[in-house]
Each structure stands twice: as structure tokens, then as C-alpha cells.
Image 1 (cartoon, protein in one colour):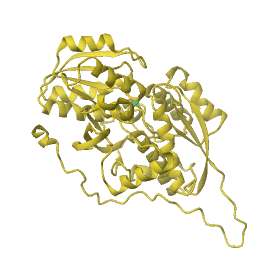
Image 2 (tube, protein in one colour; image 1 turned 90 degrees about the vertical axis):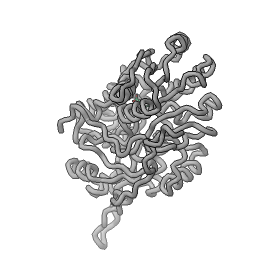
Image 3 (tube, protein in one colour; image 1 turned 180 degrees about the vertical axis):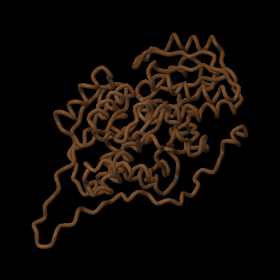
Image 4 (cartoon, helix red, strand yellow; image 1 turned 60 degrees about the vertical axis):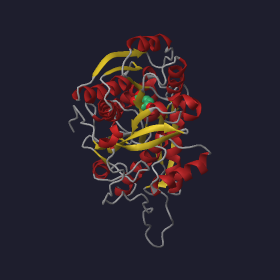
Length: 400
Ligand code: PHB
């Protein structure tokens, strides 16, 4: 794999930074007084539990609960009470759904969601109501761009980050003409946008941008069009159930082994059992991989498997880190989430000790993180190198 040499930067640069204090002691009680417990902190989980992203929502919740359990069921000295809404990855229902959590259940914190259109509706409500929002997946740039706010944080990524990193990889592999295929909504558009930006900077060309509406999986006609276009490579964003079907259909159409397939890593994350041999060899870029081999990740993976009898994936990591971020902010304000400016200030200077590797937040509150180059082998997303070191989303349009 000589063409990858330039991408193979050292995997884990030592980070000489202190991780956020994860465990906060419960507030001290004056001597001789009966122990008074602070009220429970209400966390509103708004995630997809049905539809093509259902498994992603469950993994995020599992990760969040794993971190909470590791802290003995308390964050910043507060016990946690959950309210849950299945958002069905439906942007049309998103404002009503988030208002159920904010207005009906009076939650202190919103955690959600997977789908960018849903999360943008959550960000609007969070901005208007001042409720703290931690986004554990959705990658639309606007959430930490034009819609950025002191009370909105992301534990995940922007679509631009993995897309841009892959544009560099594909150009360096010498591919000139690329066809892209994705769902027509913010996440797909921006994944392709980041990819195209990097590819074209290096002299490559996106020849054709194919799309279909979310969550449609009728890929046949588009695969026929790809075969007829004879590109050097294909780049794609699909995730969840749609990603499983796309990888299987790509192989069934006879394209596997003929036209190399590249993707944002969601294409093969949490999906490999179902994709089987059809996913072998697929190259992706993402801020996590299955075989990082660090003590931090090994411990996380072991604990996750023990708790859920399932392998963790990137979504589980993002849920785990959303809980870590909440814990870090709460510790700084001794559990008093009303101290919003101090909560935000603590997170803005925190280093999060994530299973993915340590990360900090950009000025617009998005993770600044390494983007790994991965290849599927033996049902694992094996890390091949770092495609982009400490990559920060530009946070275009953010004024805070
Ligand atoms: C999104 O809609 O932003 C999204 C959904 C699923 C993913 C990644 C991004 O795996």
C-alpha cells in the first residue's frame, strides 16, 4: 500500500493534557445535618428507535448509560432521570417532539439526535429556550456553524470532517474521476461537499453527484448509472440499515472489485455483521475504528461488550462521550446546571478522554479530532493510519 505512505502519520501522539475530571464528588453536607440529596437531573433523550437509524439511537443510549453506570449512576453529584422520545428520524415531527421534552417534561438537558434535519430542529428550540443541548451524532455543519450557541455542544463530528479527509485519500491514491452517491439531505450534501472540496483541491473531479431521497433504498437504477459512467472510484455517505443495503447491492450489481468504493465511515460502522463479505476491503474515514488498541479504548470495548453483549461502534462512543461532557460541565458547576456560563467555559477548555482518542472542542463546540483511515477486514474496521490529524471543522458562519 505504498500510495498511503504520506497518510501514515504517527497514530497516537502523546497528549500532554489533563482529561476532564470525570468523577465529581457529591456536594459536602454541613456536619450534623441530615443528608439532603439534590434533585435528580432530567436528561431528555431524543433519538431514533425505529427506522433505518434505529440501531444508531440504541447504541448512543447504551454508550451514555455505560458512562453513567461507571460513575455510580451520578453525574456532577446528581442522579439522572431520563425522558425518552423516538424521533423516527423524521424532521417534520422534530419540533413537536423536542417540545415534549422541553415544555412537557421540563428537562434540564437535551441529548439528540442522529438525523441532521431532526437535530437542527432541536438546535432551534435549544437556542430559543436556552436548554443545554449535546448532539451525540448529527453532522450538519449549521449546528456548530450558523446555529452555534453557548449552550449547544457536539460529541460527534461534522459531515465535512470525514468527507474532507477522504477527498485527500482518494486524490492521493491517484483517482481522478469520481461519482458520488448519497441521500439528498444535509448530511449527504455536506459529506459530498467536504469530499469534493479536498478532491478538487488536489486536481481530481467529481464527475456526477447521484442522490435519492432519505430513507429510500432503491439503489438499482443509480448503480446501473455508475456502471455506465465508469468512474475511477465511488464515494458515498449512507448509514444504518441503508448502508447495509447499499454495500450488499453494490456487490450484487457486480461493481465490487471493479470500481473501488470509498465512504464516510458510517458506511461500515455497526453494520459489518449484516454486510458480511460484501464489505471486505471497503475504505472509509472516520474518527473511530474497531482496532485502535489503546488502553482507553480496550477498557471501553470490554465494558461495553460485558454490559450489552454487543460490539460497540462509533455511535456508542459518541453517546459515552456525550455523558462524559455533561459530567465534565456539571463537575465545574457542582451539579448546578443553571450556572450556564461556567458550565460552557469548563467544556470549552476541557480535554475529553474519549475511547476514540483525546479531543478538545473548537470555538464553535465541535470535536477537534483525528480522522482515521480504515479498511474492512475480517468484519472489523481496521485502522490503517491517520488521514487527517486534529482536524477542526471550520465552523463557518458561527458567531458566539
Ligand atoms: C446525519 O443525519 O447527520 C447522520 C446520520 C447518520 C450517520 C451520520 C450522520 O451515521
